[in-house]
Amino acid sequence: MLEFEDQPCCPVSRDWANNSTVEASGNIEATEDKRKCEDPDSPMTKKMRLEPRIPAKEVANGAAHHQSFGSQESGPIPPDVSNTNLPSKSQAPVGGMAPGGAKVVDVYRTGAKCVPGEAGDSGKPGAEYHQVGLFRVKPGRGDRTCSMSCSDKLARWNVLGCQGALLMHFLEEPIYLSAVVIGKCPYSQEAMQRALTGRCQNILALPKGFGIQEVKLQQSTLLFEQSRCAVQAKRADGPGRLVPCGAAISWSAVPEQPLDVTANGFPQGTTKKGIRSLQARSRISKVELFRSFQKLLSSISEDKWPDSLRVRKLETYQEFKEAASAYQEAWNALQKQAFASWIRNPPDYHQFK
Image (cartoon, rainbow, N blue to C red; front, side, top):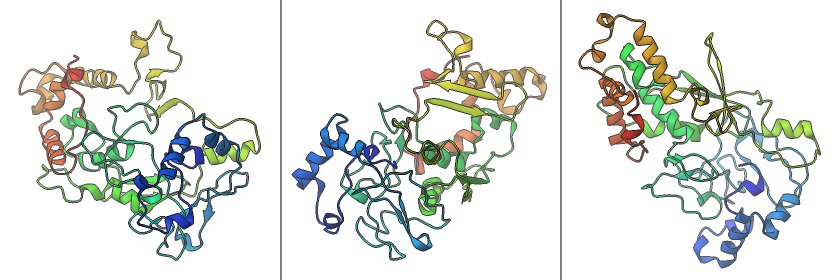
């Protein structure tokens, strides 16, 4: 969250941050300020929106990357693209010193909510706002859903593969990502490793073919041309606030319908009258992926089907998924040992044929 008004709580001042014994719950003024910040119509929030901003400071040798929220100047926020680690909460408290000697003023935060049953964030000011390593759900803003966060899903793929249960019927081993490349933006190698691989390091008793992958985590020097920083630079002092695009775009290297553009879960252009039609389904919805799987099966004679599909008659999406025994065994081991808080949809959602 690069913008001041996007922060879920007010940044702490340098002087106050140096006092590590201050508790958020014990400071009435801080609580009042936090409430005002969260109120979009409050005078404080309006003032923050009108105040210009200064670019995020880039510290020599890539020791730290931080942003000052005091008296600010206008201009886009250029991200630090050094390929070195950013300080984490455990390394550098707010107002403290990073390993390279640079002072860290505040931290970037997420609005993603912790799943039910997790300890949850403390909500204290500054670097103590979050607890790292927890499972979270989308979206960062708005009502809580049952959709796990992107980093949680990538961590799961790093053990189970990104092919899912259905395709495992035809594969000897999972399909793993060899690398994850992050674009030009504020970046922390340590945080990426913790989120995508560190939480699964001690998983035991996985079935043959499954394992913990040492995926390469790298950062590019290329800036996404539609990123906030890039668009701000093009707009200069253009009027109005930048608003993120609400569309979801997926692309696949396939000859037929390689592009899928949706808004609020429906293909772009869907009308209210057409919501219940077949045309209102995303190409990457579960039911459409299941249709593709069924089409694959119909192109193969049953005597050549894998044994996992011939043991018993399978009809529903749920039954076909459960029949992938090795995948389900790996998923159960991952849940028991590391992903106990993972949100699973009710079985009724998967009973379609």
